[in-house]
Length: 235
Image (cartoon, rainbow, N blue to C red; front, side, top):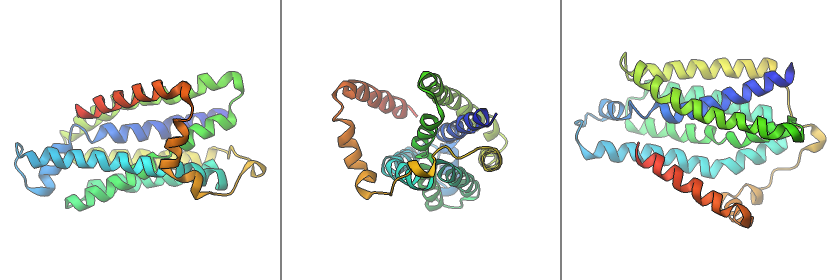
């Protein structure tokens, strides 16, 4: 029962992260116009939207190994719960943001919290038997697919009511998942298996270099990079 509760929490955590990416896409132009007063066809709107997406990705790149290292020291559950609570704060900031500065602050928080996907994957590795790992990791892939469907749809539908409404809804979902995880989800990393935090391991550039030392997956990584570049270039 606890294992199923944990897997459900991880699925929803990944889902909310991906929804956060897609949620802002259909309403980003209107939101930027609302806080800046720019005209709809002003090219600055597109540039500011691109910067909001970029800052999110940069924060994920920097903080993914850091959150992974912190979860090795303090456990997976507290890092995931803090990230989920951070998502709620991020969505509330966007919902109330009066200026572009606040939107950028929110996207920084969102990118940092979105880095918790690395911790979610580590949690699955902790609790999965070897024969279950492919299935359980596939659940994260399913969350990506569902999130990219729900996010833009939710943003578009609720955005017709008001540009800020989708973020209040997303904040509520984040709080509910935080409470669910706090009460029902056990820690997956036993104290004897933990290790001290190391800035050397948490260095994102060092992590990138180590990844490319695995020659068998370089081709796959390059393909994934082009897929993500193509996907974000069309948003």
